Length: 506
Image (cartoon, rainbow, N blue to C red; front, top):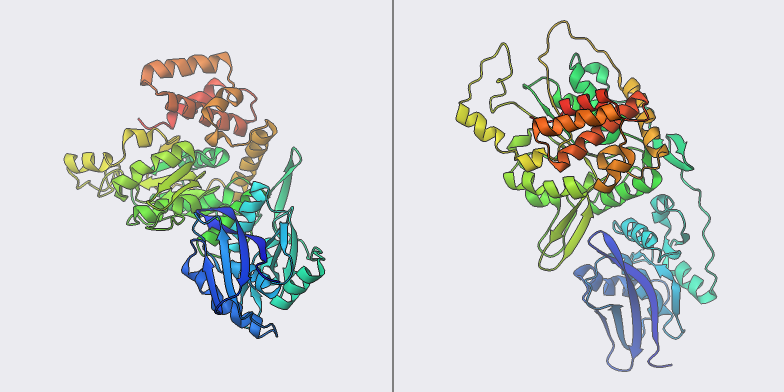
């Protein structure tokens, strides 16, 4: 039978989202050859040798014909070794009619025919599932240790090429049996949806003496996922507080955990699938591309996307590049970042809580009562001016650290703080909020941040007194809403507004 064109579905990553790709194969008369077309990368071109070897070592004859594989559509650049398996199946069964539309096929082939996983497989499968186009897939059995976390897909797991070919020959696409993995975590159910968090505390707030104001501000910031900056002398505890905030972050849903895992795979890291929000702390010498993502031909993920659903911590904040700090305004405001290159345009989700730590001056001693500041007025002004007003306007909570003295004590534990965060989290979710207070959109602020008359009068006075912008006004309302949730109040009160205003940068 000549000139039969068979096809199977697979996919490739375009940025962080998957695009459906049709793998077509045709075998025609002519000098024996094997070509792959369709704007493919070098790792796909290398599939010719892997596919040949896998077929020949498993008693299949490689057809003495002109073999042409086309990956369609041809205007999308394709990457990944997972195209090996669909290509080998189409060649092995070239005399059969194969055009199955509802099954996707993924797998890298070893030279002996083993079907292997790849680092891009999880992001591709999760993205296709989110798009609603993937219901059934043939995948490597070894990939099931992490693909099994994804619900709603029938996985047909195979160990080798012969198994895969037999499935297509028989037409019996039966779902593989596998045990659904269990998260070793605590669960709370709110409005029929589960949220997870781990009980163990590694870094405890009991280690921090004093800093009552900063701890209170930290609790509020975490309970509503508000952007937060600490200013204080070296050694006052800024970094210690920032690292302990991860331990008391709000619970995370299974959907959010999968998104975090997807980003970790894209960064070349194997996820642990634990209910823990990410914590990213890039050095101040980091480049713009490493922070926001980028690349010359293929845009790659950066720190802001890796911090999605968690914390992005900038220690020594004013030492970061001015360009980085100004570019950070977009994800702080819109919760996403756009990367534009000649060959690609990618949009990353960047829904993180921003934490910054900074000294009051270059030498760090301006607020000290015992150390003398060595900085000139010009040095201090230049240092402060690295943070622009539009950038600071996107920070909900700004706190000045207190100096440590010998009478300071440890007054609150991470366990106590986390319990308060859990209560505030539950109140926000039971109101029907999809987003926590710090991430509310402008249209949602008036819906969820309702206040009594006295609180409104206080806010109107603050507008006249401090000349607040619309963004600052929304920020105060959101912080006050979180304070009210911690207090168990249905309406925002005057005391909540006053405390929220006290955390504004002046």
